Image (cartoon, rainbow over all chains, first blue to last red; front, top):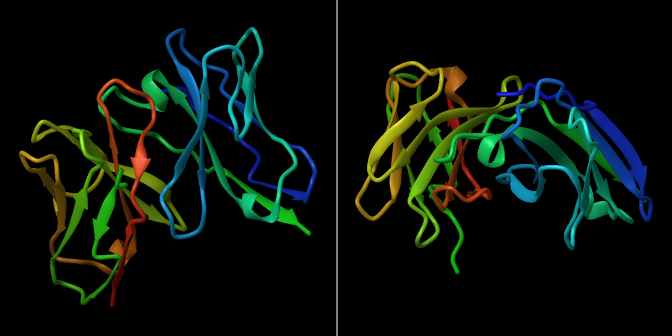
Length: 114
Length: 112
């Protein structure tokens, strides 16, 4: 599985746009890029997944350049409730085997300030 | 639609004891996987099951075991508990081949 590198932590303020970048230099041709969000003492929650270019849903956008060696999760107008850990996963089928195995990195701790 | 249910939510055990954790997946989900989360090691994969068969296992000692029943519910067991087994144990379920995994709220195990 491709190794991912993310910033350990980020700070932002309410109403700002937050961009979290993930590096995955050895991404394979059939790998997808997936992001999960986790609040303290809860299980991770799927945010978004993409293969190339741009994907947008009601929560976030995911930007993937042509070489796919990195990706950026964009959270528009964050609020205090967006304070969480964000994980970038890379691999076939949501960063894991087709059955369910997911390989999590260290994640990025996002703190949103008032 | 009910989410992934894990029981119990909290558990305190003594060193040397054994513990069984339960996970009920979302209806229709037949793939269940387990994870251990600690402050030092982060989220680590334990094992995954599909159709009552273990499909993959993480790098954990044999004291950690699991099983899946015909209704897709899963249990994991830890024998001879050690202080280092204190963690949040998370279960996730998904539809085979689809991308999104759904996690339960976890079981917080404290070994004293």
